[in-house]
Length: 74
Image 1 (cartoon, rainbow, N blue to C red):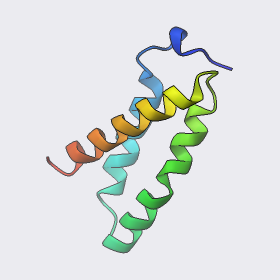
Image 2 (image 1 turned 30 degrees about the vertical axis):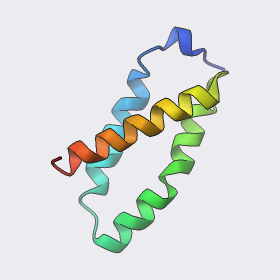
Image 3 (image 1 turned 45 degrees about the horizontal axis):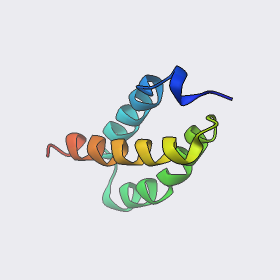
Image 4 (image 1 turned 60 degrees about the horizontal axis):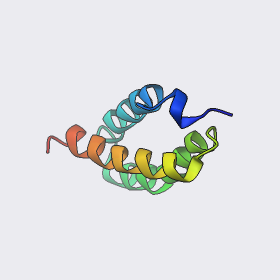
């Protein structure tokens, strides 16, 4: 298990989220909605690698929202 203090920037996870959100915006509407509807499970799996998984999940969820906004051009 990882410790948040050893990975405070969550760099690897954020890079994966950015790639996933860039992919999401290329999908047709139905696939886009389904992809995002299930993306919480992806974030949960990422967070479960950490002892402080609840904190990490919150941080990754906030980052995913911001990343999706950027990928959508907002």
